[in-house]
Length: 301
Image (cartoon, rainbow, N blue to C red; front, side, top):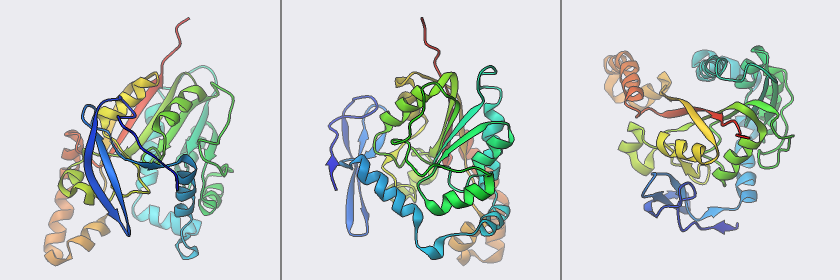
């Protein structure tokens, strides 16, 4: 693999220093952190081609991991994360997007297609990208779309074509975050909306677990953001941040597996109090996920 080393922060060009060294299997990854904006990132980092290849292969998994659409829907019915998030995101962007011009939606890394389906139901002309062949098949059946088998880096479209672009659980994986946000700006109409959803580096769970947090997982995740540095990145590429959300949700089975030693009474008490605690973490900006909605600035002539 080819590697590139940054001597300063890719977002704000400030000084960086070692945060942690993360061991994944037989590999170890240096994670540096900006002393100014707090952005943390794997450094040195693989080339763009290597990152795309790794991500594509890791999403395929083994054949036994491939889920039928029925399995996907049953799992979502038990723990409806994607459906809840898709409805919330589409509901949030509707009053934000330009009310004149095209109603076009780009879903980058569409996965099983829940967000694309909700956008299509809301009347958008949806274009979806997905590297995993299995997830493309499920998305085609679930959302009635034909996702393109390509990365965002290789995707081409005429400028100022989309009114909305969604990057859900994508930006933490990519090699060049500046390229992603700059390209999104090129593809959006003036006043178009970009939504970025990803793990929160300032979450209470990451603070406690440090590099053992499940989302600190190179080489799958190369970038670790919070609201502050993600806002800095978006402003750098001529976006105005309109809405910031923190979202925490933990499936019930996660509690049961990790807290089985407490017995049924203890698990029951955790179930009752966890929604209150998670909501408090979100209010304090220490929630698990960050969702940011930003508008492309209208060019001044």
